[in-house]
Length: 151
Image (cartoon, rainbow, N blue to C red; front, side, top):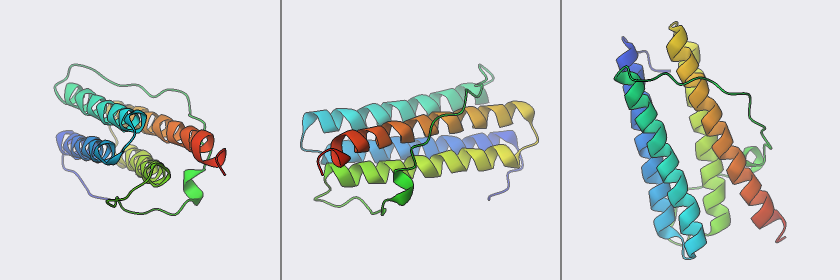
């Protein structure tokens, strides 16, 4: 885990990761043929942009994010093979990529929380970890509803 010399450096790291996540979902949306598929990934890109705004607000001293109750984890994504976006990416593959992305984001925020001594920053990172867990759960439910019922 990278070591930061200031709270701002840790926040900048998290902000950069949220920017990357928003771009990831925007790119996935652009690869989807069906409008409803595009809408799902566009919505997630917007949520990641929302996380970025929260982090920027915290950095500017405008707000503090609190952790919510623990989110259910169906663990579907934990057992699926991860891949990379390809030109002919289908919806099932996109959902698998998204589940893995959210799992990594959750772990990143847990690790960031563990790496800081600052109680308010720890609370911020735990709150964002729970939001990423919610995203993963939504992808798992979609996978269960769309893919597992089709097979």
